[in-house]
Image (tube, rainbow, N blue to C red; front, top):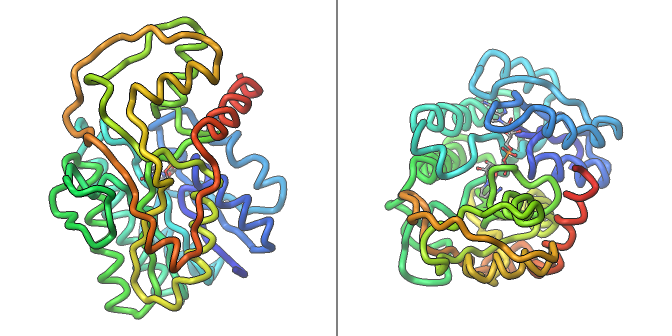
Length: 317
Ligand SMILES: NC(=O)c1ccc[n+]([C@@H]2O[C@H](COP(=O)([O-])OP(=O)(O)OC[C@H]3O[C@@H](n4cnc5c(N)ncnc54)[C@H](O)[C@@H]3O)[C@@H](O)[C@H]2O)c1
């Protein structure tokens, strides 16, 4: 891990990955355009520590091929960790073209310009949402992914297809990591756990979609970062490979709310709303492949992870 370019470096997952790479002695160049999906100030805070420890941060748009070419040539990274994307399922319903532009065109640009600059390996963010409403649980990497139910999920299916093509054309080892709902310090402000903690602690009602039986395999950020680092180290042995990074411990929305009530020490008031189009019914990661090939072993259970996120939120606000 000598030199690494991380796209989406100022985001939730990206900023943690940059810090972990610096700790391992890598030279890191982060790229982020401070997309307006959420406040710029939050992203500046995310990445501040890493910049003070020596990471270079470039404000640039991954869909701008000329700029990405210049950056790839100038920094000549060995490894690209591509995390930049418009993330979030629900807003993608209102802006499918914007999501396709950033997530599909952007990925094509990052991969193509990386190939021209001699990048040796790529690790790319995909998502559990590619499984759609598949009925067989847990979700395995070999399951079909041709029925995504949101524009966001469709862009991640396309991202994976581009990664396979990239491997086929250039023989550049390329990993696609299917992250399962990630939480922890710096979590995106649009995600349920962060919103619920804020609302419940303030005594405000929480948006509670559907009957509460929808379930998610919530995964703590440190476990995701460990999986990303393992993928960088091991992808050269695999060529193109997809790995699930989850926690193999799904909980229902009802159980999640109870766990957050315990964490913040206050009861939730529910503002019940109908289930949302595009939200999948359940996610659950089959980790057999990641355990065997990445030695991936998530260690943070939900209550421990929630306590860490809550401690961080209290210190921040
Ligand atoms: N957080 C999760 O639960 C989760 C789950 C599955 C997959 N993912 C994927 O992981 C990656 C990181 O997600 P996150 O939760 O950290 O989101 P995030 O929004 O916090 O981080 C993404 C970063 O990408 C940047 N970005 C967006 N468009 C860009 C562009 N055109 N050029 C340069 N930078 C751009 C944003 O400014 C942001 O800082 C994304 O690819 C996302 O789809 C996240």
